[in-house]
Image (cartoon, rainbow, N blue to C red; front, top):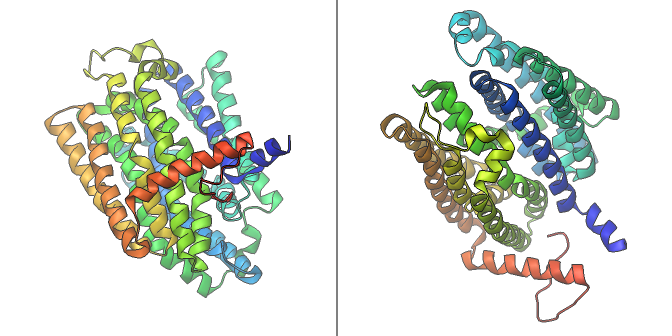
Length: 461
């Protein structure tokens, strides 16, 4: 019982649990919306979520990564100033973005209303203010490694919206606008909870100083680009499809395998959330060997895990598509000629490459090289855009769009390892050796066996 309690309270377990819960609620809500909305309206919802995610990468990318890095080794006084600066800069970014979107909607109203982005330009400026406090709370809690509180916040936000979608599916017939209004209310409630509990740091906004503002903005000018680029790597396919002759129907079809890739990324996001604060703290304290050890263990363990996940996704692709969207997407679409199941299988191969690519990015940020990570993501983004344009406008193939994702990720892995090796003198082989030792250690802890011939992996790894 004591061992079970220890495992349940462990950082990686809590982070993974949080992401599993959110992914299940997200996938469940997505499945219900795919079944309850028409193909065109569902495409509008996908564009609303995609555009919102992109903008939030800019809003929160300015300070989030820097705040986590610097809070990891900050004293009490610096901590207050950093949290205050995070709140101040976040508020300023939100005001700026809201004004830009409102101005665009006013000047180009007719064009926007005739596009799939009308819901986004109409409602996102308000959503940006309503979700600011609880998103600020998430980054402070992550820096403090309070994963139980993070789980609570995310569960409330995602859980209530899933409940709305479920009730709508069973007995209501809400319009897309009404669903967005429900989302606004739920975000307001989650943010109010964050403010009342003092998790968001808004009360420290007056403690911000020029020095801490400058520190976060200097780090953030690179990480913002990195996060925007990372988000674009996930969403540029959708954005280009929405502007192509293939239209909203292709957007809706492609969104299904994209959503299923979130199953693959649940453990990746979870372990990355715990790896970055640890690696950053070790880097700030100049413990380079510890940074290397953490990189090896996380990269190796995740790589082996993703072999299993990708194989599972590949074999049961039809089942996942059926669960998520129903029978109508199992066969080749008669209008567009696209097969969703085939695209899912291509993405399962893409999933094999994700762990090392993500960990090299985290490694570069941890050793205070966000500029190099930004260059890496920029090159990957350019490769992806070129690949998408060729796939969509020359081959007119969604399969080729998915294959482009594999190619740009290979480029990212090569660049990430090349630049991180200059800082840490890495051994590619050690990644896989450490991954095996991680699971051996995990097995020994679970069974109570102790074998001296195996290298001990420290618990905080």
